[in-house]
Length: 247
Picture 1: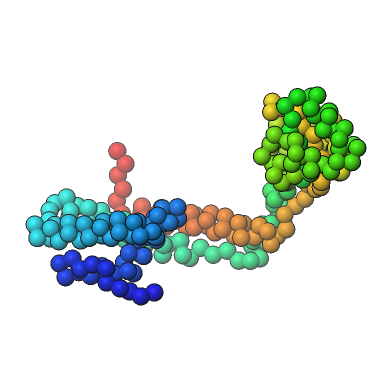
Picture 2: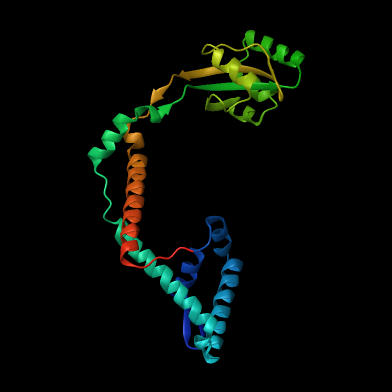
């Protein structure tokens, strides 16, 4: 990337790199705006204003202002404390064997619940649902019927709802779907949304996540626990070194 000079404020250069660095500080959705010509110009104006106010503050000797000095001390305290905490918890370690042992001892914590993959067609009356069901029985592919008749946005995908587990759908729909055999089209199922024709594509029973699927989360969890323990242990030792009065 060329580091072109975009502006000079009282001898201080504002470059393309400065602008890009500022853009990266914003959330992704906001970054898109600042990558447009209008957005870049607005941000450049803000950077120029920032430098102008900074120069004004120095000329007015605000570096000696009590409020400024107090905020500097507060920032120094926070940063220094963060550095110290980083060093304290750095000694906490978790080995791969410890992660594996934890997984083996707690496999029940990592269960995948029973799930199904299903499609549906949503109609606004029992009469319409029965008519569409009859068309399917007479050879109309379920997916084509969904595209033509369903009132659900999933019609664009042939009624596909993807994979879901118990508790994700309304009870009436869920109960019917989990009782269906694969490939069988249900009778109309009434819910608060209307009448559904349901077709189950796949069923998966309960299973346990593999070690590789969860080892990262386990290691992070164990490490965090040990870091907290080390921090608490160290601060308790400091209470014996420094005077603490709780009033």
